Image 1 (cartoon, rainbow, N blue to C red):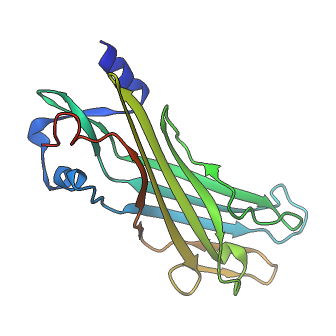
Image 2: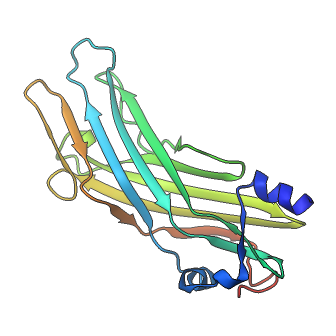
Length: 203
């Protein structure tokens, strides 16, 4: 049926009414669980001739929330499901400049669903791959039946070796860092079109 095709194309799921839990209730009040960063790794080469002369930062981030959109039927809701993506930022060393503010698309990106990441300047006290920030943007949009829904969230996290990140540079100039444990990112809802309150209620 038409609704099912739209749901599959836009990575939207249907939840049963009986799944109304404290998590679902948070969606009704637009209070979302924070994003969760489970991995960050960064690297700078020595500058000597080698196959890879790029600085790089990689990160894995999860939005754990099921975001209710509308009552799909008497059995449940249409919603944007939780998603996990991998993001990568690279720039040439030593000639290239850090791509501050340049949005990079994270993977996987589905039809109407995407995460981007952009490098943010750190304190400047350490090598860039050991002292940096990351700005994330999650965009989700879909048409369910004749109704259009869109959500955009943004959030920023900072990492610095010796503060909330581990890493160092060796004698040859190679620098490497990684995240210890997980990091939470409190996201802000910056754009919202359509809501379960408007279409059939949220409970």
